[in-house]
Length: 492
Image (cartoon, rainbow, N blue to C red; front, side, top):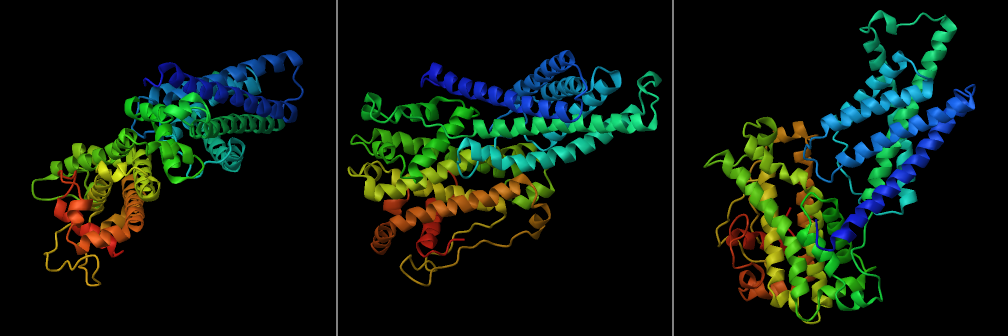
């Protein structure tokens, strides 16, 4: 947990969990009432009340299990037994609540729950997907209702066929002899119950995603004493001390990115540039740390492949013979959201420091050079993973950023086999990360273009904009060469 403070951190999680369970119960009640009125209106009031109670109990079981397994990281957690058991029991109890107590009905609900949980795990839907655009809760939830209904229809049809096929292998006492009319009626009611149950689960999943990915503002109220003295402490404490897989840490990076990019919370961004420079150093450090870790993990993955050959992404996808290498390279997939927020926040803060940094703390602390160096090093590592051949051009070919004859950065031959596996998460995330890094670097270069050109003409570009320490990937000469291409707006 975090020291900002443990009670406040617990309260954020607890409030969202309570809100999720409250709204989930309202959705479940509406769906149950709609099913009861349209399908089984002939039931007595007592039977409806008992069914209503048991149905809510089943939905509570599923909701709690969902809250337990959902995580912002797609690393496989020990969720299979928990989710399979909860979904199977919840499905059986829901089916009995809808259709009445019957061994055959309970088994079909049990099988439907297993089917849904298997699909859920296969699609890795336990990962919290943060939206690109933060909308009000009502509109975010409303946008997902049509897709939830369509998915519930498809899944309920497939699950119903799956449960019917399983009934063929059951003992004889599970089968029933019905007249033709009653046979069709029973199947209609059973399918409607399956659809209602899956619709509840789909809406529950969507509601959980909406509530737990909504931005949380890690700052004291504007105008309070804490806002006047140290408004950045809650955010920085969360970023520095929370565990890497904590949802709070993801929310903190999202909040930091929005503060750096948008002008709505200008007063919070202005506090980063306070006179001592300590706050800016801490902000830059929490942005640089994930990117440095990404580059280091990719380097470890490359080194594990062989001593003289670096595997491209096509080798990763076609021949994943080295589990250690694959695990390192797939870190790009596991923490992709944090890496993108870090790059965007770092680039935006560095760019805005040119006009908003009244005390020059960004330049004096060396954070600008560290930012551009780390972003370029990360980009080179990701491009290597994508299959680009990174090589250093002879110095006489590199005419300088102010020349129109700059050398083309050698990318080598792309492996066409990557086109065969575009659906692989590593492929898509690598290209998306490269786009984010290029955009971030271009943002800094555009803001400081005049200064960088003057440094290049004076031969001081490396001294002013490339950090003196060893970069996490590549060499200082390679970083300088790449920076020249960005100055010429030729990096791609």
